[in-house]
Image: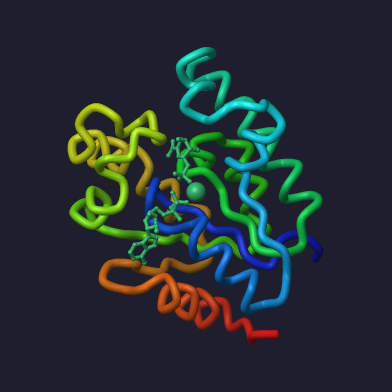
Length: 171
Ligand SMILES: Nc1ncnc2c1ncn2[C@@H]1O[C@H](COP(=O)(O)OP(=O)(O)O)[C@@H](O)[C@H]1O
Ligand SMILES: O=C(O)C1=C[C@@H](OP(=O)(O)O)[C@@H](O)[C@H](O)C1
Ligand SMILES: [Mg+2]
């Protein structure tokens, strides 16, 4: 089947973008990120879309961005952390090699705590992250073909664990 070689999902700050870029390099293929696609198409940052139009509008843009990327892209694809909230997106992902990058809350706060670019964690990162994960944990697990824990691993080590989990060889 065509489509991405790897699709990375998981919560904000887990390293989807960082590890996705490394994986693309190691596989000798292209990297694509649906957040970056949305920013490029809209000509403004994700946080501004949330503030100006609200989350439901962002989720519509995201659903279309994921659909287009899954259809067009054959390299490594990273999704935004909330993309799996959409039922049709979850159904679409069922046929693809999806890897769920996971981490615990302390690691999440280290990686995203002070980063205002993520509007959903801007007020009380620890509490907001716990609530997000309570709502999403089962959805990540539902669509993933493999789960890779990222706590206490470098991005390079996470990338290697993803290749191992999918039994992919480097270019
Ligand atoms: N394995 C890791 N260990 C430590 N820091 C990491 C790791 N992976 C990513 N980071 C850092 O965490 C932050 C969020 O990474 P990013 O790739 O943007 O995550 P995501 O795309 O999942 O939101 C960045 O500052 C990145 O450098
Ligand atoms: O989890 C979420 O709902 C979101 C995650 C973000 O992407 P990253 O997971 O790449 O940070 C971005 O799409 C937006 O801020 C919403
Ligand atoms: Mg990202």
